Image (tube, rainbow, N blue to C red; front, side, top):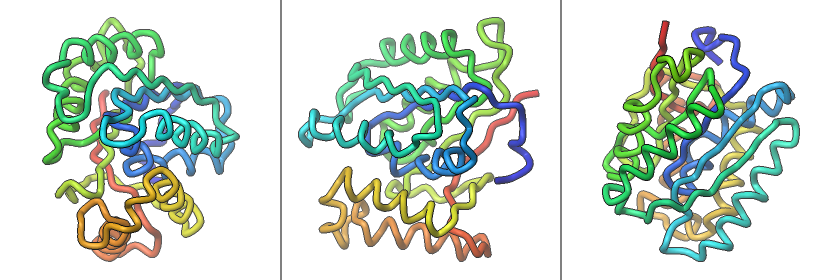
Length: 222
């Protein structure tokens, strides 16, 4: 992990548009924290939509089972279901108020949110995060926002990378495959497992790294 993020992080707020975006975007970050047994950190994960296109209850069950893998972390998860997939623009005020609620309540030093990409829901959550979450009177403790990059949405530009060991990378892929078995069947689709693995291999080559990496964009506050 880059020394640029070695700040005194005690509370982390993770904002996730859809259930599978957690595994795709930032689960490697938590595997890294779990390895170091950071139980002194409070981590809150807020999911804004469980989705309409798959069996929601089954997806939520798998998500919560995957979260249990981080047994050395102090994690609270909230599946708010306040928005419907592909129509976040109809729920902007609700989403904004929810972000503000948890931002004020949790007082995070670090926020993880999805980066802007071709998926409108992702871009809306990104914009609302930056609109609400600033080091102001509500929370002067905020130091960093990390925008995690979803591998299947035409966005490979990053200015911060978290190195994953082969074991951590394998765990990330395993979590994705359990959560969305159809990923494995889709070989040509950008949601397919083959595409996702190629995405990470290309990032590894692009950055000349011997490790697999999870890409982010970092915004730091003084």
